[in-house]
Image 1: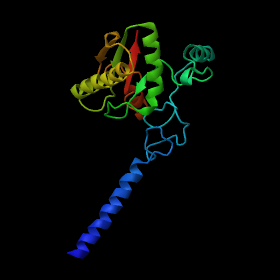
Image 2: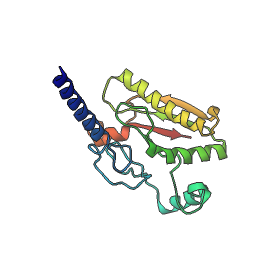
Image 3: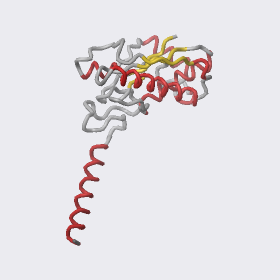
Length: 189
């Protein structure tokens, strides 16, 4: 019996090590190394579900406007920490905010608090799973974003939430890259 217990302890130790290896995220982008197609992304880079940087399509003038408007880190002009109102991406079947989304949400919060604007927080899902599940998931994603913004000081009455499920894809749901882009929250003014 003692030998069996020791053998089980060894197996448990091996399983725990394997689980730790699965969770390892060397570059801290929120995507485990085994799934990270773009390892070693710089800290603070907004990435998609495969760990590759998202391209938000800003031109140089827009970047300079962001620097002047938000002032970068702690009000020191010179670096942009996030692009206000950019899409917020989510992992497969999850409504948990990724830490890589925080700079975007912080910039959005700053603009909403300063302007008093009202925006729609629209949630979407990729096409895996049932339509009913994806509808609920998209609502949960939108509510996660709303909760973050309210906790950062945005008045809840300035945030309207809607879930669209798997409708309104912005990319092809037949490819993983497309599905990654469809797992999102968008802001509409």
